Length: 195
Image (cartoon, rainbow, N blue to C red; front, side, top):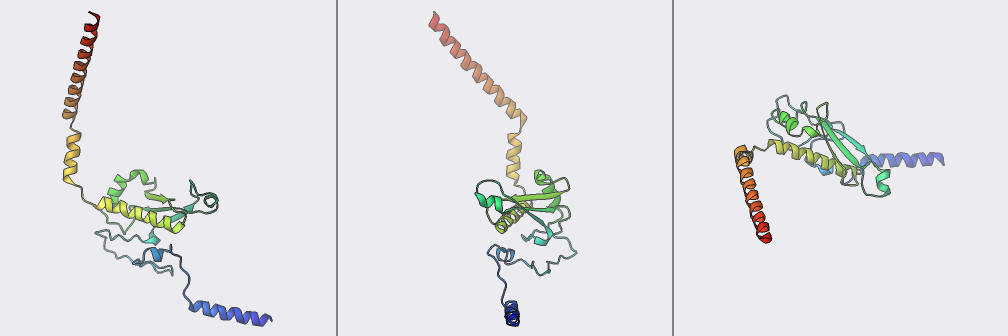
């Protein structure tokens, strides 16, 4: 009886090795099908030459992913699962980001950067861990693409014009003058009622 069970287990083990393993819809390979990262220990190899343009690909093996309990609504599910995802990486040593963009990220997103120089992005929008990881990676991609985008000179000119102190002082003087005139008009109306 025992040898029959062992035989069944060994047959099941052999057949399960031939069948493909189950992968969730939220598996990183399904979320990022064009990615060259695989769970089998093979990671994307980077060349020694520096990256000149961000490709849009974030290597999952180069970032640190942590999970924790999410806050907010969700009932008992929130208390039982660690679905909140936090993705962090050291900005200055990230070789997959172009060298000229790294200081720009440090400057523009300094509120999201820790004391050790790590950019921290978290998400708890979904109740699924891998969906939250996907949202975090999209946020990182948006941050890098935002810094990579060239500045619009028209917006810079408009900003300088809005912050022109001479125009601000002139507008304040006009406002105070209108206020005085309105006050004078009101006082004249009150005096005429008492005469």
